[in-house]
Length: 107
Image (cartoon, rainbow, N blue to C red; front, side, top):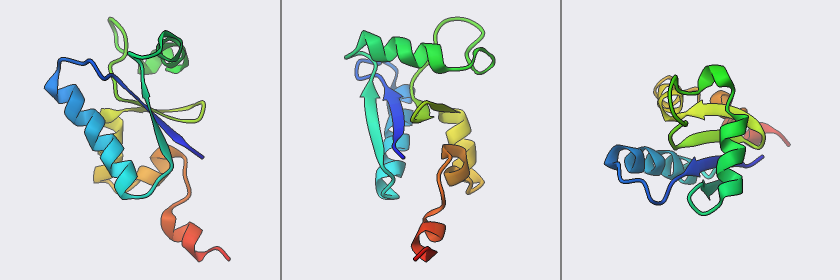
């Protein structure tokens, strides 16, 4: 499974850039298969992201801000939820993945 991280290369907000980098670096450091999707480079990808975030998970006003995280078509949620899962050591279940320990133990 590939985790898709929807980012924005042209965000002027430092906090958004740091959050995007945090997610991408964490996935890389843990050797998780991931793909960064720049919503500024593809209107189609941006619209797909907006359409696939459940209404109850989106912001009250405006569009959802990056980073937004998906496991294929399954919405995992945004940075705040990712951060909480990192702090509680539940990132694998947050992403809908088997833990690395479980996959190493399998024959």
